[in-house]
Length: 71
Image 1: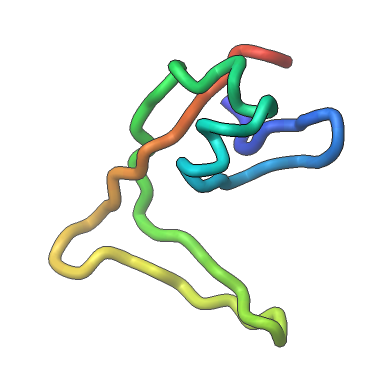
Image 2 (image 1 turned 135 degrees about the vertical axis):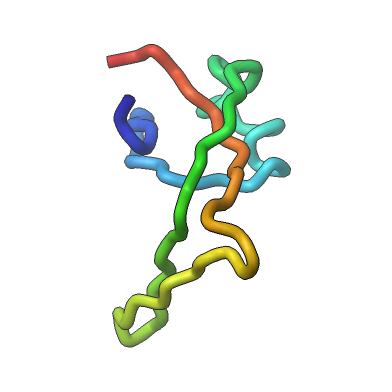
C-alpha cells in the first residue's frame, strides 16, 4: 500500500474525522477502515525542524486509518 490519497486538487496524508464525514474527497472510502501499527512519527515546526513522537511505555502506536484500492 502507498501512504496518502491523491484527490483532484492535492495529495492528502492526514485528515480530521470532522472533515472526513463532510467532504466529498473521503466519501468513496469512509467505510474502508483499518489500523496502522507505527513505531513513531514526525511533526515539523515553523523552522522545518523535525520532532519525533514515540510511545511511552510501549514499542508501537495503533493508529486509525482509511484505505482505498485506487491506483
